[in-house]
Image (tube, rainbow, N blue to C red):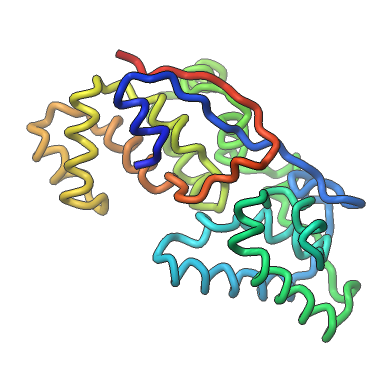
Length: 250
């Protein structure tokens, strides 16, 4: 559980950091995928990401999203200062992953240069042809609540949760503390549910539902499973943040 999640359980107000997009110097933001990137460098960086994920025994997207890798494979940063200009790279990630990233890019540039075989980023990262889960994920990251998106899209809460799940699986960053803030359980039920996840794992929700005597709705269990998957052990406090305040409902 994140530190913010623990504070929510204790009934405190939590300041949540939402990362603002910062375009790389001389490049369009990776949010606008019209930017071109080098696919071979992108694959080399994915290999590095996989190695880091295997060592830490966490999913690859916990480290660096595909969007960030595309930005790296477009801008070719070769110094720590240039690395910090990439969307998704803050001081903490630069400190932990910077050496591996920069070594990979420098070696690649030495062998291939910086202008070989560039291609356009996938359509789902652009404003056109974007899948709905990307739009929902970005709206959530920009501070919109699940209830707000339900109203705007005229869909069930479970549909929004499914979109956020798919967004996270695609490499998008979903703020775990904001998710726990959206939970409708009372604090004691939330504590019991998280303990059941710790004991039984989250591969199947049926055993957890039964262990809680059916008292916790499946919808909340889906939210908590997503929360656990998205809890980031290494937040980037040095990214330029927008602070929003939220309180766990009673």
